Image 1 (spheres, rainbow, N blue to C red):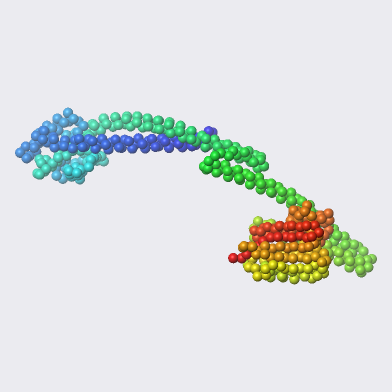
Image 2 (cartoon, helix red, strand yellow; image 1 turned 135 degrees about the vertical axis):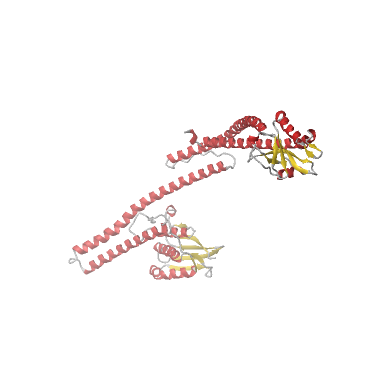
Length: 488
């Protein structure tokens, strides 16, 4: 249905709003005209009651002439039926009147409006009780009789009587209907036309944007929507810009997920090989020992057991690193940071590798400022970073080489360099060393390490809002550089 479109809803809302405004405007005009008419009527006829008393000789010898009053009632009912004349006593009780007795509904008239009317500074219109209705008030004229100095009552004249009301109501309803119809028709037509002209380009942009987003969805979020860049900085421009950025981010994330999925498949393929090899080796040695236990010499049995244990340990190390990597990749993984002394931690790690370094003839050194401020981080995870880097450096170093850890304070960070003078890494392989299960010289997969060590290092440093860089020269060694924030 067409009413479901935003353009139709905006048009309908505008039409209803303008119609309501037109009705309120007509009501305001009617009320204002009525007030002005009452003001004019009362101002022009303020002295009508006093004039009646004087012209009709209603007071003779300071007394009210009741015969003349009755004659005045009869005469004005015939000549001017738009006014009604009432005689009141000082308490407001109606004593006589010119109206039809069957139509008079009040026996008393409130005197407060009369007192207000008789003041010199009275502000019109002033409404008084209408004797012909218990819930209606009208403009009036009044005068004390026989005189203001010796008042025995009041001559109370309703300026708009019942007959006047009937004639005025008919004319007013007709005029009001005509005025309201014209106001609503003209205002609605012009304003609706202007509103629709304003709404159309806005909704057209929204429709185009909706179609582009729908096309983006139907393409499985692979084809970026061609959102046209328009001038201006209104909300629609911001919406178009945000949707364009969101689409680019979605496409980039999907590509990243696709790459991760491909890497995960490669990882599973590599894992199947890395797990199968030690398992098959361990299984082969154990089956040989089981089948030929009595035939094998003691030295051979011990050699088979040693090899089985060696491959079993390698399998255990690989599984442990896989669990560690999975834990670090978890969504809620977060380091438990605390301030600690970096030089002290590194001294402990170097002592841990001292025996292995001496056996291979490699020197371990800690260089730089030993009085550095504490750094902020998870001490267990940072220890794992240094263990992996030092173990990796020892693996590619030989007799006479050196492994050095340098510390340098830079602003609110401590820069760390872990370098060795080993065989180095070819530049073609340097960008791949942080990939899971990648090993330098990847032609063999039977080494003692899993290929996850540098991947774990990179992930731990990412959790500490840091990144690691590697530089190397074949035959001259490799350097890994990263930074840690100092504790506040």
